[in-house]
Image (cartoon, rainbow, N blue to C red; front, side, top):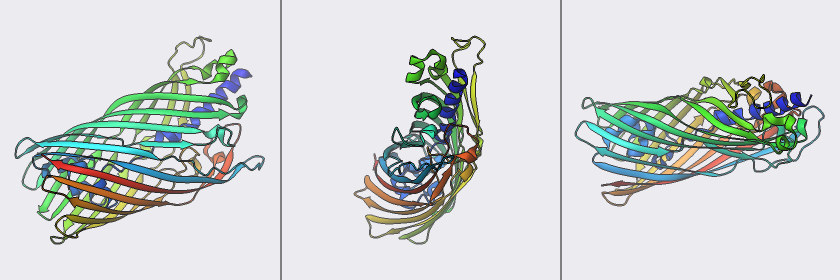
Amino acid sequence: MKKVLTLAALGTVLLSSTAMAAGFHLREQSAAAQGNAFAGATAGAENNSYAYYNVAGLTRIKGTQFSGGGTYIAPKAAAKNVRDAQTGERGADVQNVVHAAVSPYFTISHQVNDKLFIGLAGNSPYGMITKYDRDWIGGDHGITSDIKTATFTPMAAYKVTDKLSLGVGMQIQYVWAHLTSSSSRVGASNVNVKGDALDFGYQLGAMYEFTPSTRIGVGYRSQIQHKIRGDIQSPLAQAHPAYYLLNQDISAKLTTPSMLSFGVYHDVNERLALMAEYQRVFWSSFRELTFVSRETPARHNPATPAYISQVHERWRDTNFYAIGTSYMLDEQWKLRLGLGYDQSAVRLKHRTPRIPDSDRVWYSAGLGYQYNEKLSFDAGFTYIAARDAHIDTRLNGNDPARHITADYSNSVKVFSFGLTYNF
């Protein structure tokens, strides 16, 4: 019986961790592009930070350029009407589920000759922190979820003709995750899962300039198949040998999604520009999360298989749409505005407390300031209004000791600042 409870507790942690694996895409990799809600980011190429969206745009960056900055992401998510789905017991509301974070970025590029351009970018494309009180009623489904990534991308772009440019980059991505849960089946004992991985992907891009004032772009970032290695630990395993499965080395495979973007940029005149963007994020590539023991055979029972748990996911591919405009107020100041719509990858059936995600609308504004011929600054602000989200963990097929229902209200404020220097 104890072994059955141990497996159930372990399964609870693994099941609740799947929301982390889907991650949170941080689109905010350019202060300038954020001012337009990333409308036209795939075609904009106003500075080399836009290479995150389309590496081919480097051919518009003459000489040697450095851009860098950071984004402060301040989300707000409150869980209300929290109840035990079986007994109806009311749990305490949670006012601060999602925590703020900073996402830095930099890009340096160099024009080798009239045709070839090279660069290196660093950013954090995925990340999140959700945290509940240790004794909250939904502890079976997660307490802390902390994921961080760092990606470095060496890249090159080539001007095939006066109108067509192509680009390629290699993504070198490190991911680190820390998850905690408690299980009612084993006396609310805390269970910790930590792991990390370093894996690789690629980036492709193309840009076509119909005229000096009108251009389109397409960008593609590949999925990355991560092979996470880490461990699972619990004080219960140290006190009771029967729960040894809660104290061992584990590994898991997860796939971050590929992304395909299309953008258009048009200068109406010397002051006014219009742009638009469409992006498809292929979350459906994240089909399952499989955990296996790295101790084979298991040290306590040679007959125990290396396979521990497999969780099937039902994420959906999502769409992002944005329109924007920029207006030169004078020779130094540029005003940017943008409006976007971002679709959630999580439907009601698979929504969990780790990521209480929902569809959202982006309202963005920004300012650009050209200090001199070499140095410029950009600042952006975005308010993201998310739809209210409902969670009913009975719908997702998990089998923890306690199911919950809850209502979430979500919003995000995003502040970004960047500078660009031409050598």
